[in-house]
Image (cartoon, rainbow, N blue to C red; front, side, top):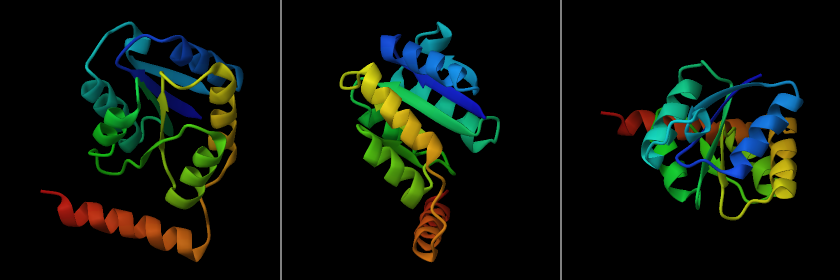
Length: 149
């Protein structure tokens, strides 16, 4: 799987996640500060989101201090469903119920142990296939279309 990772600031947790994903056999594409180029959080979020929305990467993992601003910025890109997850259950549910395609991790709150649990849950949980899940994800796409320029 091709996974984009990006951050506005260099962080140990982003470096750990890149190594962990590579160790799990994923191809990691680096953007923002994880590519050695510092950028504002809105820019690092948009860059990653465009890679995922454009199909160049299958999923994205985005980092910022709280994760809130990056989640908001990434979700402005059509086709992105970014979810800020602080534990494995949130990651599992975001994938199942929301078909989330960008995982957002707080660099302030997340230890390597918790990051490992979040990543394992995120990448092992498939998109939900129930009628309920599909209906609500379709509604997200409908909302997005109605509000696009």
